[in-house]
Image 1 (cartoon, rainbow, N blue to C red):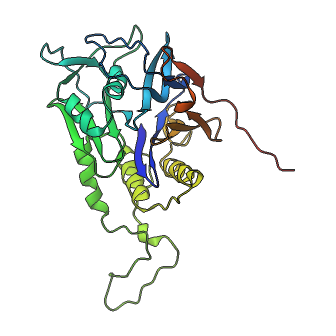
Image 2 (cartoon, one colour):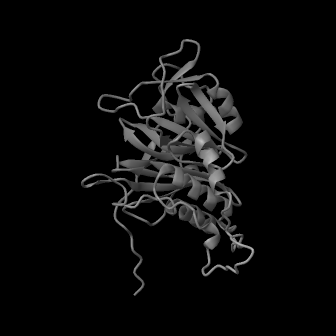
Image 3 (cartoon, rainbow, N blue to C red):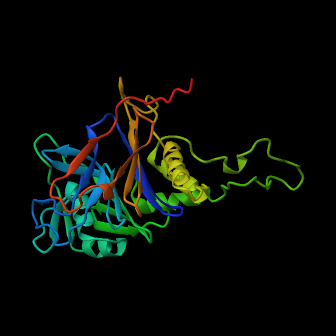
Length: 324
């Protein structure tokens, strides 16, 4: 389970919670323009864009969970169990494995509009990365400053939906999640007005009662509603630190707390890491379940014309600033 958010303050921010039952050795990966991408069934795009994001590195290859390119286009992959349908190779299309979609689009495209055009010619096929690594059921959110879309491989084909709320979680399919917002149209960040009765004088007894009924559980539909409500109403401020802090606050609002979602005895779903990319400046901010302090990685401090990727491991112990 995961939650991704695209958010605008003074700049465009894009990030997510990765919710799993454990870490897979994630790193912040910085991939320069001349990295020799190799795809299973197609040639690499002629366009060369540098990429930064969070990935698991296997044999020098980054398997991205989320990333942005040097032009500010961001993509996050989220679990989509029981709904993702991959197809057989199509000789008339560009065939990609699910783990190849993020680097392919971020290398080939600068904007969501360009990504939508490229997606028209893509077929996602059931191809594992390697032995012991099953094909993961995924869907994706793709965002830039101007727009956001959701990409879902379904029984009906590769569906691309405009995303007016800039949020994605997991199941059910995106159109159903979006329709669920109608159930909460009464919510407000303001003090509520009584409509209970014309004869009873009812008044709020606490701040925040305008959002009574906002779901608080960890299901994907509830996280979706909660994240959209936060995104639509949070006041982030103009300074970079304020915007980044606000973004992580939104992710904290939908985080998985260790022990609150139990898969079996001793196995828990938890938020392994949270990311927030300043897409305009190419800076990736990351916190983890073991280190809540914010670490920053700057794409533009690297040699973007190199041909080898760099990996910066994340995690470690909590850093505490002792004041006395």
